[in-house]
Length: 133
Image 1 (cartoon, helix red, strand yellow):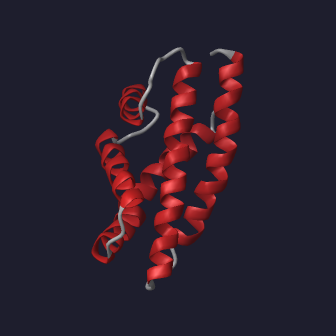
Image 2 (cartoon, rainbow, N blue to C red):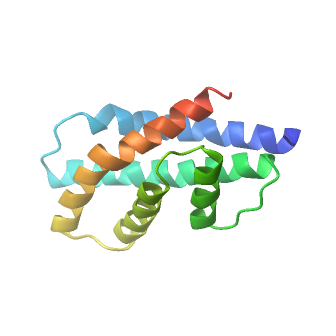
């Protein structure tokens, strides 16, 4: 592992960890208002963005060349850094969708998926990489 690149993913992991812990803090609380839904979606967007960038930095430290979030997810899945590549691709699509539009029905659907599907995957990734620090 390239030492400077190894340092870069660890530094980015620190920011990911802070964002992840905010998402974790609120993912298990009742979410009933529009403001609460918007907040959990925002925490997810921020955490997911940092997650794929941590993975990208990690892969680059391992001498892989990945350019896009999709390439990063595919390579991270092949290396076993993440367990469910298709869920990560779905999360990427949903993150892109919520970043560009707001719709009440979509917000409710996204809140449910963040809590029940995407957060558990982020948690597994967090635990794997935290073990490598």
